[in-house]
Length: 630
Image 1 (spheres, rainbow, N blue to C red):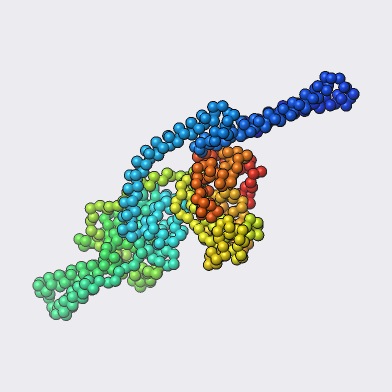
Image 2: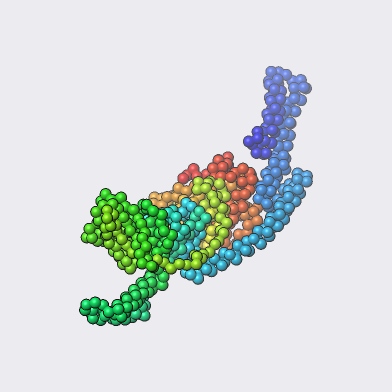
């Protein structure tokens, strides 16, 4: 009996009494059939049938004035909405107590909201400051969790990475090889590393990846070098024009004064070349630590704690490619760093054995080692770093030597610290409060299976909150829209004349939904239109589904009215008249109702998606389960 609802228990109790009265009446009829006509038999028969009528009447009164009001009170208490006192008129003081409890809860919620608002004001200021900084630098910012799912991005990121969305994997929008290589460099111990990769439509992007609280922050920019500055070119030409006559005048021992002049001009030429290179690269040369450059390579000695003027992504990819080539030749290579000039170091790949022929090394350098820059060969990567690589032999040790400049020491890296207060959740969580959902609605040419979609709208929910991501489109149904349907949703033939076709609209909407749980009011209707389009569009919606009609029945009982208007009215949600029966208007109302139902369902023990589906089966007489049609 504990598994039954209150109404079912009362029905069972009165049913048992009714069965007993009918047994008494039946026995009396049986005696009459045998010839018994005494007054006692007649009285028993009349009493049995009379009692049956009384029992039915009492059951009706109990069901209407006790069981149903109790279910309504329970739904009101769980959702925080004051019940109608008239509905609990026969429950003595219980109805008034429920109203008082709801009001007390509202007062507590208001006090808590004020306290939260004070804290949120500080967070809002930090958020606005962060957004201003990101907007001013014009860079795309993407933050991911430890699994690589996007938890934050800014407007610039959406421009650089079209289709970017919360709770989606970042490697779906960038060259996965370049991103994995950068992550390997972080795993090697670097706090941050640079990367260059290809995005959609062949756009080359440069960025910096940094570890943040178990996740990763990626700052992205367009990789577009500015024009070569005239002043740097003229300085380079001036020093070269001065140095060449000096070299031509050499004949025999070099006088000390000439040697100093040559040295000065040589240093000036080197400095001018460096300034020109820096200007071409955007005003600054990337710095990479030795651990970034050595990621994925073997080292016999501890690496020096120094930063070199180098792009970690391309140079590490080149070193790994050369290491792989050497190992195919049977060499066990090790990476080492040796002091060179005061402002430079030699990076070396070393092994015991014969050196590599220069022509073989040149052949290796003709290939593109970096998956993020497939159009740059190894030789071009070296040229971009103003360096080269050559074989050397020292005793039994052979090596490939590459000189690099030491990056200027900095006082320390500055950055932005921000607490997003996004609680961690397990990847496979099916709690209703943890689900990633798309709440949606459709408008159609009619209500039959032969009708067509004319509008689709959707809102994305992550961890029980609206993300601001939305989808909305008109759909050209390929047929005339009946005036009766236009009178409901306001969409006529002219409105959809230039709209996407059904295959185009469903393909785009499927991309927006991804593998999210779909939420709709009267889901079998909307899901039916999506799924019947498979033959025409090839787009399959096999997502899990939640129906707010069934969720409403789980709270208020099956006898309550569960239209969208009734549900939103019970929850205190106002739908503007002009928004009702529009796809986005109904979607917004359904999303707000779903969010308010989650805590009420949790209070009733319906916590996970599986709990909701199991409970929905007990209401299958009310409406079909859209998951059964998947």
